[in-house]
Length: 305
Image (cartoon, rainbow, N blue to C red; front, side, top):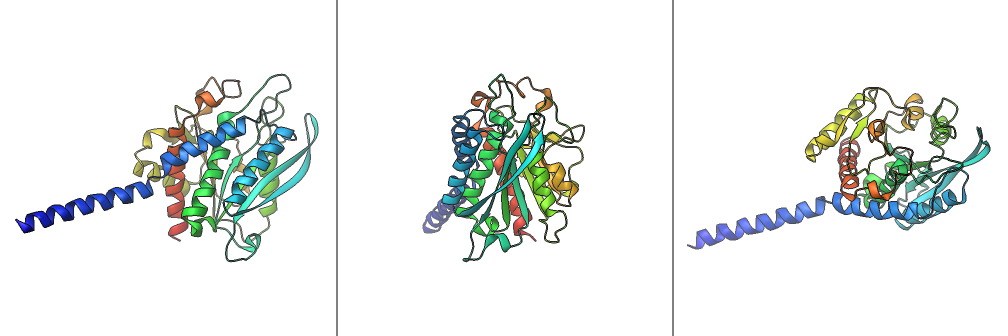
């Protein structure tokens, strides 16, 4: 009888420990909810095209969030001629504090990126909830989480919120759009200490989550993403687009930083670049799924070198 009770007690202890472990490592739903709330805060500032007061305020808000979580933030400012004239841009970059040393003198293994601006429209209000306030919020909340729970990973990353991803004209061209990522990538072009990888997030919060990475994605990063999605039971949300996609990953790939673009399937939607891209289409669950896959990818990329 004693043996039976001992076995029962051991079983209960094992179950309790298992549940505790699961809870500790099941951060994605909570992170999704946090990113959803931060998305709402971003949208409260209104449309945020490059050069706008609203974008300055959003950048300041993101800076405050990251600095409070132990990240050192700097703005990468520049000007460019655009179809609407000369515009001032500013990328937001962040690296995690470590051991009192200057984080900007430390080599990083990877980049985690999104774009912070919304598309410019002269005569209508466009908030860009999923394109890409939700991704911007996800990067910040992932940064907070990693700084708190996995500082050894945080120290190996640079977070980047690109300005000027959107074109000022209706359609993106080689000269109109990707202003921030082109400027940022060019600074890495001749350097030998380039990061080993980049992960770009864009439109990852839609309630009908359907991530479709570009067809020319770096094969090893694509395989890693699909494996992470499989392990999370989220494979049905991830696939490959039928063609390449023009987005902020392109300049990074061109200068030798292999970067994967986790981007929602905007081509088959009715809300893209319309007033329908508002908080009503954003799902905390979708954000949690996307962020969970990113965390699994980072575990593989940063823990097993």
